[in-house]
Length: 258
Image (cartoon, rainbow, N blue to C red):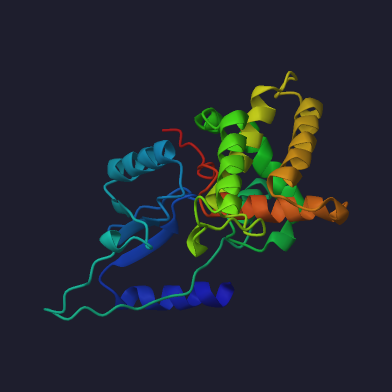
C-alpha cells in the first residue's frame, strides 16, 4: 500500500489533471483539488438517494464529478486523439488504517477479503441493515401463493409436454442467481421481516430475526438438509453474492450530512 501511494505521488506532477475513480457505494470525505475529477463507478449498485447527496456535495465544492456504470457501454466513451491524450494508470489504494465500522462496509461490498471478517458475520451484518431499512417493502408483491403457484404450474407444463422447457428456461437449483430463486429469497425476507413482532432496535430481538432468516433462506436457496451446520455458510455465501451483484437492493453508501 505504501509503494502504491508513493507511485501515485510521483506521477501527480506529470499530469494535467487527476481522474479519481471511486466506488459509488463507498464514498468518503473529499480533499479539495482543482485538478481532480471524481468518477463514481458502480452507480447501479449504490443507494440512489445517497448518491444524489454526494453529487451535491461535490458541486458545492466546485469539484467536477460523474456517476457511471462501467459495464454499461452508454457510460463509457472513447477519448479523442486530436490532440493526443496520454493516460497514466495507477494501482488502487486503501487508507493505511481502517476502522472496524469501515472494514465491515468495505468487506460487505467485496472491496477487501471476506476472511477479514468472515462470511457468516458479514451476512448477519447485511441482514441487520436490511431489517432496519425499508428496502424489503419493495418486495411486498411477491406473495407466497403467487410464486408457488407459478412455479408448480411451470413444472406441470414442462413435465406434461404442454410447454417445452427450452435450455435457457430450465430452472437449476444450484444457480442462486436465477430469477425464480432471487424472487423466492426476496419473498422469504419480506415475510420474515413483515411478520416479525419483536423490537428491531433491541439487539436480542434482531438476532432472533436474523437466525430465523438463515433458516428460511436455507429453503429459499434449495440447500439439502444433509448439509447440517454447513448450510449456514452456504446461505451466507449466496446471500452476499446476491447483494454484491445488486439483486437485493442498495445499502452500502452511507448518508451524507451537510
